[in-house]
Image 1 (spheres, helix red, strand yellow):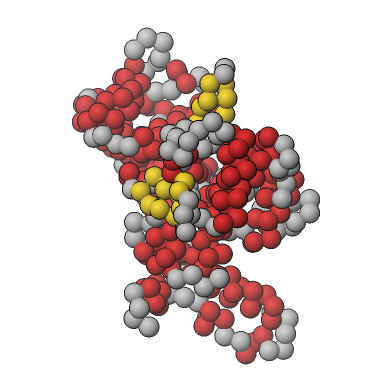
Image 2 (cartoon, rainbow, N blue to C red; image 1 turned 90 degrees about the vertical axis):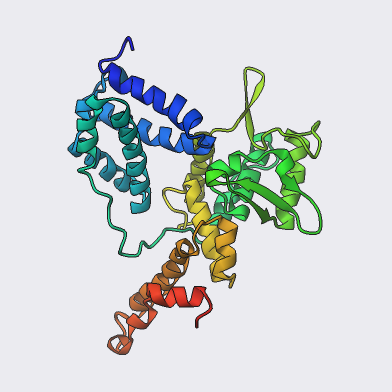
Length: 347
C-alpha cells in the first residue's frame, strides 16, 4: 500500500473492515462503526503523542505502554471502565484477525494482550442529570426558528426514548407510529429491535417538526428523521453534530441552572432518563426492556446509583449533627445479592 510507512498495518486494517467484518462475519453497520471508532481513536492518540501524520503510524509504535496510555486517557475524559474495556476488546479483535492473516503480526498481538481488561468489581456509580438540568437544557433552543425547532425535538426524543445516540439518528419517519399508544421503533446493538412508547407531548413536538422537515413525505417514508443538507442532498445527521449542538445548549443553560454538568453528552441523557424512571417508581424489569439491555443485571446500576446518592446525601446532611454518629449509613448500601433478589421477585 503506497504512501504509508507500514503497509502491512494499513492493509490489514482495510481488510478487517472491508472484508472480515462486513462480508465474512456480516456484522451490522453499527457494529462496524463501533470497531472503526475504537481503532480510529487509538490511531489519533498515537498521532498526537508522536506528533506525526496518520501515514506514519506503525505496528511498532502501538506497544503495551502506548495502548495503556490511550485507555487511561479515555477515563480521564470521563469514559467509564466499561467503555474502556469495550474499546480494548475491539482493538484486541483487530489484532487477533491480523495475527491469523499474517504471521508477522503475531508479535504485535502478543504485545497488545499484555494489557489487561480493567476490573469492574467495584460498583460503578453512574452520572446522571437532575430533572431540572434536563428542563434547563431543553429550554435553550428557540423553537420559533427552523434550527431551534429541530434541536428541541431531538433532545425531547432523546430523553423520552432513552435511546443511544446512534439509535436516535437511525430512526426513519416510518419508525414513528400513531395510535392509542404512540411508539417509535429503535434499531439497537446487534440488530436487535425494540418498540418504545412515546409521551403525547413528544408526538406534538414530532408533528410540528414534521411540518417543517418532512412536509411532503408520507407516514411510511424511509427518510431519516434527523438530517442535514449538504450540496442540496439530505444526509443522516452525524453523531458528532448531535453531540455538539447538545453541548452548546448545555453550556448556555449552566448560566441559569447550576445542576447542568460540564459534559452533557448524549449517553448522559440515556442514564438520566433511566434514573428518573426508576426514581418515579417504574419497575427495573420495564426499564431494562425500555433501554434494550441484553441482561437485566445491567440495569442494576441505576438502583445502585440511586441508593448510593441517598446514602451520601444522608452522610453530608448529618456529618455536623450530634446525631451523625448514631446514623448508620451502611443500611443505605446495596449489594448485588439484594438487588438480584429484588429484581427476580425473591423479596
